[in-house]
Amino acid sequence: MKRRRCDIFIWALQDHSVISQKAPSTWHRVLGTWYLSLEQYLFLFIMFSSLAMIKPTVLILLVGLLASSCGQKDQGPKTMDDIAEDYVKLVLKIGQYDSDFVDAYYGPQEWKPEGSPEGGILVDTFVERTKSLAEALTDIDLSQLTSMEKRRHHMLSKQLISVETKVRMMGGESFEFDEEARLLYDAEPPTYDAPYFDNLLADLENEIPGIGSLQARYRDFEQQFVIPVDKLDTVFQTAIDEARRKTLEHMDLPAEETFQIEYVTGKSWSGYNYYKGNSFSLIQINTDLPIYIDRAIDLACHEGYPGHHVFNALLEKQLVNEKGWREYSVYPLFSPQSLIAEGSANYGIDVAFPGDQRWQYERDVLYPLAGIDPSLAEKYYRVQELRAKLDYAGNEAARGYLNGTLSAEDAAQWLEKYLLYAPERAQQRVRFFDQYRSYVINYNLGKDLVADYVERQGGTVDNPETRWEVFEGLLSAPYTASDLK
Ligand SMILES: [Zn+2]
Picture 1 (tube, protein in one colour):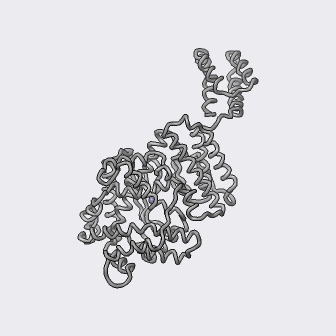
Picture 2 (tube, rainbow, N blue to C red):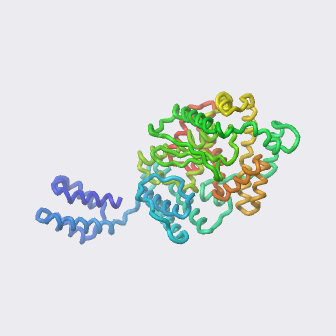
Picture 3 (spheres, rainbow, N blue to C red):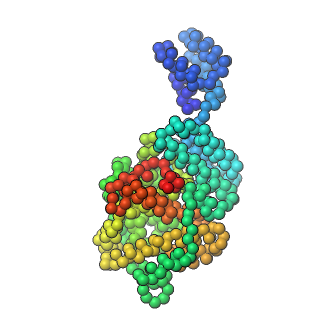
């Protein structure tokens, strides 16, 4: 706002005839909204009265002087756009100290700091800057905002809490798991004890009968569903094409939207979406461990359609390009935006393939492509549904490990027991805990919060049109976990 007021005035100085014709309204605006000292009014008077006689070089000098003086004197409150710009620059600056901190940025290149910083992170400076932006937000008059702008305001205040928390963590401070999840993701992860998961395991016992431990039997069973490496790309491309086709039937995405798939190794995750802006995503699939047939639809929807790729493309289109809300051009990973991102990406699987549609499509199209016996599809799906109920066991392993009550080995064993992970997968997951910590809650708690929200508004499995509609609304506006309750 400060800059715009000065720009208007400079424009007026450059065109004296316009200012003469519009003097009353322009002057009213100047006097009503600027905070000028007596000297400045005198200065204005002398300048305008002698404008016709002044040489161009002197005029430029006067304009410069005035521009700098109005910059000093205008102490008006920051607008949301001012705060958003400062926030983006701050997030980018902090991102210089941790390569995971900024997940995506596609705003102006000149906002990105150059080079790499010397020394450790300046915790106090960054915390101070975050607090002053949060304070500036509290100065905004909410009664003047539309409901969407209020959402924007609320979301930005939550994002700032997460940025401050992460900076403090980068400086060595540590929080208990639940406190970290609350500060970073605006969420309250539920707690379950071992007997809760033991009961769920009992249901699986009936599905996979036989001798030996359930874990060993499950690992034998799942061997039948591994996608052969040479068929991986065909299966993924087919799954993602179908997920995209279904999404485009219901959503209006930018015409230029597109993606690229890469196969990588040596990561703690199984898939990742790197959003690059202009509706383009780089989707990476980690091939360190065997990939099972259900992961094709999972990853196609989660990383692509209607998951991360679509979410980012809609935020870019609706919020950054159409509304000019620059804060959405940067995505700090350890923030409330991630709960909505991961939750919607997981729920997006059910949106695109509701009810029996998923396993039937897998059976008819993907199983034959992968060379897997299609007659096993329904059974595998039933087992996976029961296994998915155990998912919160992963949060318990992370909570225990990060709070120091479980060693890395104990956490891996817990994952082997309750999530039926093979030992290598359990170790990979513990490495994920090391790297991303309480981020794990975003997948399952995020999905449950998104599902409840969409279904409460009529987006149930037998109302697919409403489900798509509510889901798209959620992806196109600022939401944080506490907004979904
Ligand atoms: Zn994800």
